[in-house]
Image 1 (cartoon, rainbow, N blue to C red):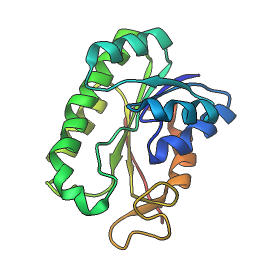
Image 2: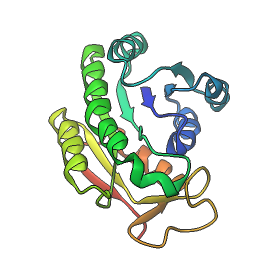
Image 3: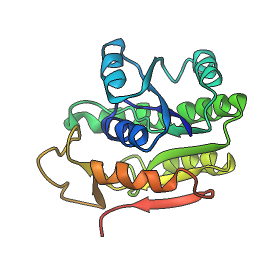
Length: 193
C-alpha cells in the first residue's frame, strides 16, 4: 500500500514510519522542517517538506505520490507541556483547516482510504473542535483513531505515564494503528485497558 503520512516527524509518526515500511508499505511522510527530512529518510520514508496550510502544495504533493491511504497524524502543540493551554486555538485550527486540506488533497489524488488521529479525552477548550474534526473524517468515509494520552519516547511523558485520563504508550499506539489501515469507516478508541 502507498501511504501518505502527514505528521511523520511527530511523536507517533516517528514510530509509525518504520512499522509501515517493515510491513511492506511505501511511505511518504511530511514534516514542516527541512532539518527533519534526513531523519524521515533514515526511517524509510520519502520526506515531503511542506505546511498543511499551503493547500496547493499539499494537494500537489499528495497527487504526485498517488497514495492508497492518507493518514493524518498532525497536531499543533508546543514542545513545552506547560504551554498547551496557549495552543488551543492553533490545535483547533489544525483539526479544522488542516483536516479539510488533507481531505481535499486526498480526494484530488483519488486516495481510497483516509485515517486520522483524534483523542480519547475532551480537549481543554471543550469537545467542539474534536467533534468537527471527526465529522469531517467520517463524512469522507474515513477512520478516526481516538488515542489516549501518549507516553514514551518523544512525548510529554517520556519517563512515565500521564496521571489522568485514558493513556497509551506511543509505541503501542503505532503498532495498533496498523490494524486499522483497511478498517471500515468509524471511530475506534486506542487506549490501555
